[in-house]
Image 1 (spheres, rainbow, N blue to C red):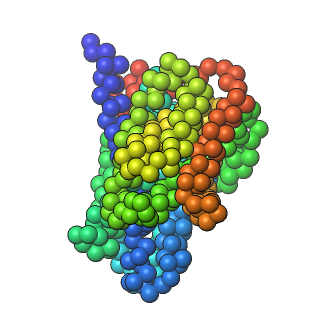
Image 2 (cartoon, helix red, strand yellow):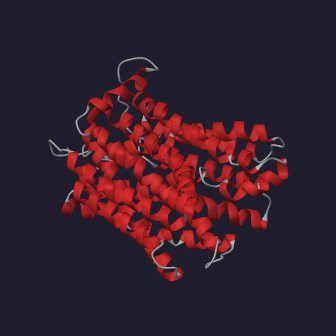
Length: 412
């Protein structure tokens, strides 16, 4: 007789790969318009500040939608919400490439942002609930890596497409990718158990207030916003820093310097082993310290090789801290896990929205190096926060993807 546990092992690997891929392409939509802003100015004859709304419209819809859809996944199921988000993305994304008026592009970016916001809180809750404890931080590491890599991959993708084709094909091609990914999620990952909580359609929104009654949980959200203020603030500052003397790099060269950060982000999938050995709070603190040191060193020496190395250290610290933070939030939230993770995503992208504003303000005061140092100080200061977080009981085992008494898993 074949041991069901041995049958289950390959399914974890396949599910991890699919969730990583889908997380990467969904969140990449947030960043893919950054290289397109100059094109939008020419095509639609608009100002640079108005062109930036192609990104902001998505960001606000993405952050706000996550609050709603994360809680709704309690009622309708994690997999169902992921499928719905990918389906809507597959339909709406190609239409962006057909518009001839900028206001319609903004409307479709809002719809795209709402569709994308269905995915992150649902995939995080799915990973925590469907993977056993020993695999949980690892899958969260892969998903976190996808979220982080999306900030670079989205820009590289759109920059590459516009070099060979027109900007419209950025959305045509991505629509096809979403369509294929919709079938991957539908057919290849196991169905989760729908909780069917009591209440009406608006109950999930009301439950968000409950997360602030959980001991220690609100402290986690300070770190959530800090991480992405530093991350997006760094990328926003890096562009103008490298384009000025003594570096004077081209747009394409700056993009490849940013891409080097992917090397540091590859630490994230191994976070599970670090947490198992040293504890989730210790790994979180070490990640914040490493990120702070790396960011602080970025402007310490005007040498490109040294700057790239420091940026890799910074990215590695962020990649270490984020999955540990996700695991900590999931543990502290208990039955409010989906709402707690939704609010975490909301705070992340509030931080992402504040990052450029902080960057422009600080750079205007005392320059690029000062901005790097302040952002680094913010990360190092946030290492105090975990000391106020108490873990009162051990994390319980999650429901496995394949329950031991079940040899066949429903996929539809």
